[in-house]
Length: 231
Image (cartoon, rainbow, N blue to C red; front, side, top):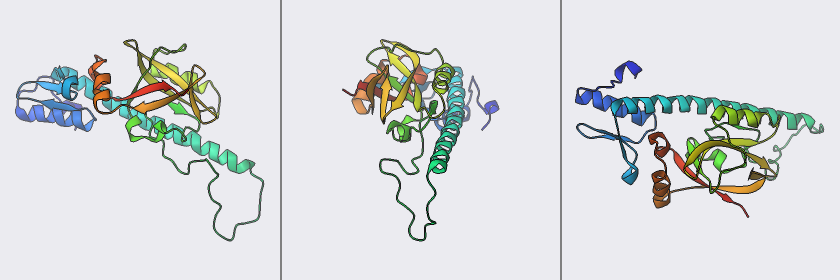
């Protein structure tokens, strides 16, 4: 399906069905009636124009491409770390029996599914390997000291931490304001502003309440997570 098939002024039922199919293929919870288009579910459902829906489709497709690039980059970093660990191990006799078991506490082959930018070995974080973290929005109780206006700025700050540093960037919401933030992984714990935090996926009524706090349709379609103090 190409952009040429998406019409900002759909005139036939086939045109409208094509637009809905494209939205759903992009991961958007889109529905329609005979005349209107909607984004979201339940009480969070929002009426949108065809042109706005097409814009949301393009944005979702762009985010999907960026997530795929982030997955590749994260896997490449993880592979570099594992190769470095193997090179620093002292040589031993050639194994003739079963291969050694994985090191204690080290996940074996966990696939990074986290969508926003991340770096270093984040495979020990539950959020990093969750299918629900491909397109997340994090809800914070308070705005952190360091925030970023764009995803690229947050990712650049993460890369400046140096090779081997583990971090995740995320789009966040606090006090009605959205921004990008950066959390680091230290001794297996996720830290924001130096404090240990946990991330919990919001589901059911909690997720609906979280979606009700955002106004933009594209934010309603994300999975919603709560950032809480680990103390």
